[in-house]
Image (cartoon, rainbow, N blue to C red; front, side):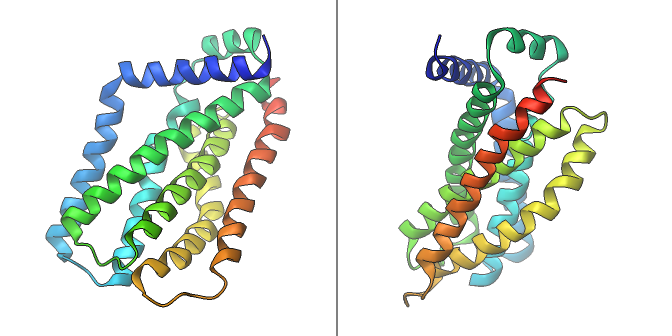
Length: 219
């Protein structure tokens, strides 16, 4: 079986498992809806910069809850079974692909709820939707890689928080800066370069995952 078939089979496995365990998906969705509703009660419809910052902070915690569990829920028995049927690169690529899809869906749903409850100050909504999907995928790639590292430790959740937040803060700041264009009708200089920088960071995370995960896999 070639790599593409193995990645496809592992991706389908995660997708079917997520569909069958719908309580996990709806639990994250309920968390998002309740958080946004509390923000609405506390702040109403905030100004543009606050709206943008709150949205990306919610995306961060959505990613931690929805994506980071991908490795943490795998038992040692399951990992031993995967070790016997797939290679480390196929396994990590299937996880990255599935979590990117999951976070893309969660980003769009959270953006819809955020717009309904917190107002819609966007002047370029289509651009913000594109940036929200790109940002959600970027966050998912980073936390998938961190979850793979944390899964080998005893204090999994604590280690992922310690490793994750210092790494993710620069990415969040970049996302907030880029997404600020959606609140202005003026075209900002350097937008393409910042988007390419974000894509380059995503590519770097994928490459690091493919290179480093085999060392974790052997444990």
